[in-house]
Length: 338
Image 1 (cartoon, rainbow, N blue to C red):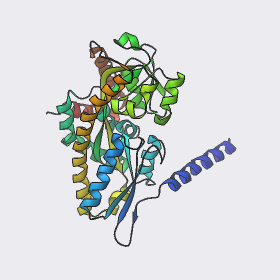
Image 2 (cartoon, rainbow, N blue to C red):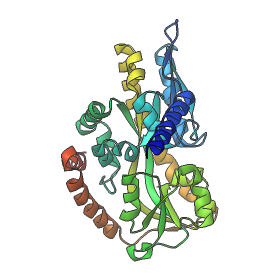
Image 3 (cartoon, rainbow, N blue to C red):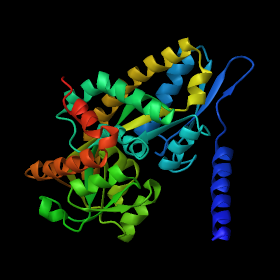
Image 4 (cartoon, rainbow, N blue to C red):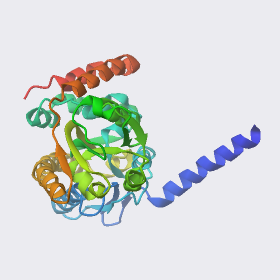
């Protein structure tokens, strides 16, 4: 038993060394230039990458070159969960992560990505500038020591499948690829399927080999990851308005002056709006692109059965995370006025 413990400790230390070697903490040069590394998991040119570069360019311009962001796409600094954990411990300066990954460490943050949370686009837009979102970010900071200055819209998640799905009955036993976190698995259960955990960059092969029968993502993500090559149907479930939270480590945030922090925060608000406009423009186009590539688009006759599954899951979460006041945070976001 003692030998097992020693091996375990050595593996943990090796992982920490590997992570710290992958991305050093924020640096401040003699000229006052602050250099930060930003990780995300999507390919070059994908909407997340475009968003990261927009933030990078605006900050460089508005701080006269004093804030420099180096972008590492496509899991270069590790899978999504590892990248966010790097921000928490300070070995990575910034990361863009689904709210579901943050929810693994602070459950209320997951309400931003909860299935069928938003009534419509206006409700989502109102959330971005709401006091509820600001208070939630502050509560997460107190819990994790990480700032969350932005929620970038990753997109409206839909289902891509090798089986046609027109009703809830069609998803019984359907193996749906999900990321490896609790809330993301609920997406599959909301759709009536069975969550099957596969890393983002490995999902293509998993779908091709039949490890999963289906996957869910915004149309932009399905297109960028080429899942249209290994699935036949696009099912317009619109089950999650998915937020990609920008996290920044305590060390990186503290390296900036108060004036620079304000510029950073104000710029994030602007880039949030930029991302919403980008997604709205691209999502319909990507659906049409994939239709031309041979996918069949299905619109279920009613989404009410899926919505009811989401309500049932929310009741379980209220009880499971009562100590975190999960239900109160859920109600605050659900009841945001336009």
